[in-house]
Image (tube, rainbow, N blue to C red; front, side):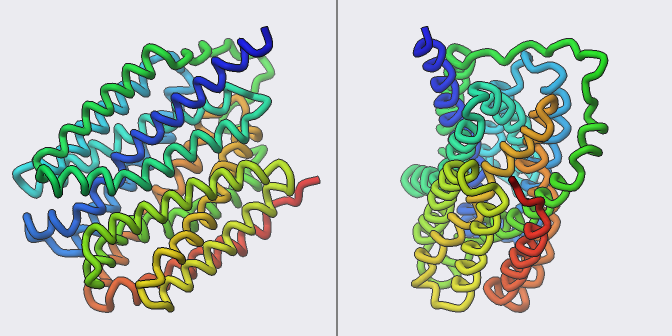
Length: 385
């Protein structure tokens, strides 16, 4: 009996792993296509930066808003609708005949993209409460792998079939939607709140210290990943290494990030979450500094350090936030899966505009500075017993 109750739980985590992979793979379609889309529609690097910002903003701002709805009505089909809507919008970037069609598809895709994440994160944290850190880390790892292989999937389709054939990836989303509807355990119905239950505002007030510092660390990490992940293909193309090298660079970054999430999830409950977060940030800072100093041919090795370091704190932070706010799991998750990205989204446009004059790698020195600030803030996190 004991074994039969465990299998469905981990089966659900496996489905969420796959779903997160598919959802997040769509989120990386625009970045590797920037060189091709700029050639097709003749827009500037600053405009590309603005579109990256729009994608990040819409993906991020929709998460806390939908999290409130999901926490209130957990059994509505948020996830199936989100994954199909996200897929249709982001794959349309390839066949849109006008620049303004692409510009519209990006925020629409971002909204549906954000709709998926609070539902997935809430389910992952509740499927196996006794192993919540590992369950959440596995869920997050699926997303990192989606970010890693999304550029390769995208480039493979458009180089072999053409931009207009990117829509065939919608069938992958439809298959995943069926897997969700038919096989994923339904979330528990919303429980009637007891008279002494804690409201969202009261919970945020109670944990404002650790949540505030964790959020600040999430912002510093998101500034790195949002800008580096968004412009890596452009850096490699401008460096003469080609579009495939840029796509592979993104894959290296996010595969390493997936490893970092698992490392953080494994050690978070063993050596302390604060120690794990600080260690990850220091590794990321070393990698980011080296990437800017050394020739681009060393970039793949340094991207491993950046990916591992920046993502070690991610799953740990989400699980920690959910433990602080157990009655508001979806909202707690959205703070880190969306909130940090929303703030960081405001940095992509000015960085791209400055890069028009000074070059991307020169302007990117603001990224290790951001990470250094994150380390200082992480030092203020409370020590664990």
